[in-house]
Amino acid sequence: MSPPVSPVSSSSRIPSRADVVVIGGGMAGVTAGYELARRGTSVAIIEKGLVSGEQSSRNWGWCRQQNRDPRELPLAQLAMRIWAGLNAELGEETGFRRTGLVYASGNPADIASWEKWGQIARAFDVDTRLLTSAQTAALLPGNGRNWLGGVHSPTDGRAEPQLAVPALARAAQRLGAIIVQNCAVRAFETAAGSVSGVVTEQGLIRCAAVLVAGGAWSGMLLRHQGVRFLQASVKSTCFYTEPAAAVTEGGISMQNVALRRRLDGGYTVGLSGQGQLQITPWGLMQAKAFWPTFQVRRKGLTFAIGRQFFEGPEALSRWQADGVSPFERVRTLDPAPDRRLIDTGLKRLQEIYPQLAGLKVAHAWGGMVDSTPDAIPVIAPVRAQPGLFIASGFSGHGFGIGPAAGRLAADLIRGDTPCVDPTPYRYERMIDGTDLGKPGML
Picture 1 (cartoon, rainbow, N blue to C red):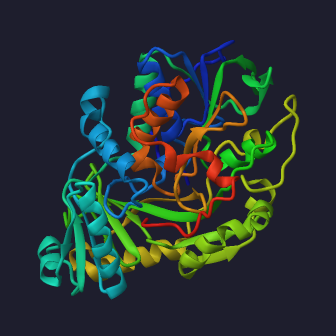
Picture 2: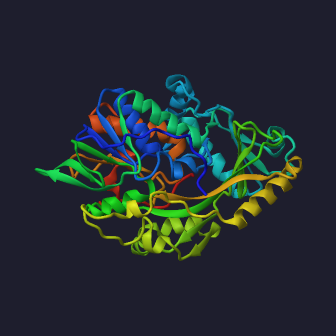
Picture 3: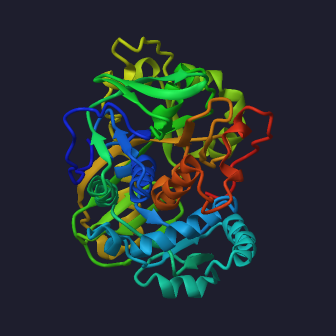
């Protein structure tokens, strides 16, 4: 069941034109729309369901630099600087607190990986500290496990997914952005080789640029337009608890289970590396590109064939611009949570923290985490199609780096100086034979 999300008002009708149309009302699309509106660019954000209705409200709420792939670190660092001032800038509560994050493990391979990452992080001036067993215990009072070691980033933090994106959306509206919800984009049009408009279920919006920021659905829309986009999704399960004893004010990742303190005194709980890979037609067709990633992550996966095979974002759907699209048939991607994983998460938490005995689930949900083969997002123009831009494939990292990703997308659309080097996020790496390899740090 969808987590409760702070509501955003919606325009009843689409505008006839805008400088930029953003497709998708999640973190990537809303932050880009906010940045564009802040700079005086007219923008329409078109969302098939509700703002932040899918993965942008279903993630853990971690805002981190810790254990990032070095290609993502500049974006993560910028995002942390933006997060720090966002409550004051928006005049609304995003839930952001710089409370630190701790990873703990009994696996020597994890410790070695964190030590290697620490060497990379120091080159970026990231405050990260490798912990001994005793130091880990000192940072995790009440934790019943004797961990081999850990790693700590005191400058990382947390925010509330159900609050943050809607707050940004409302701020974008105050700056002039038009947001239309429950309105799907079916296609986009071109004139003289360049993007000239988008066709929605309400009609045509003329524009000079389109940003595809549709999360797990981006690949389907792009494929419909003849643009190849490598994207695969895994179903995750997450839940939050009723208020409970304060074992941390930040976030803790422990082998197979993670928790984050919430503003309401409960915890958001995730199952690290656990998920369900649903077999789909498009998934099978792009299996070769994702094989290295699958080998890395297969241990925590279960497999199924279900509704996604026929009507999800990886189905082989065809439609006409004047007919009903798959985005109208599935307004919100809302997979059922895995009860087994919920029970496992509760059991592990109570074993590790005896003071959480009797912890109760307040709300649980499923989500679809979309990834690229290298677990690095695409935030880039499509060179072969002037006026087309993509901000998608965030691979489970989109919430934390979202404010910076939106700023970079706005820079690229407007032709402003990029806030970070955009090279790692270029679209063409998916189609030009670049060896995408295995995903880096997650």
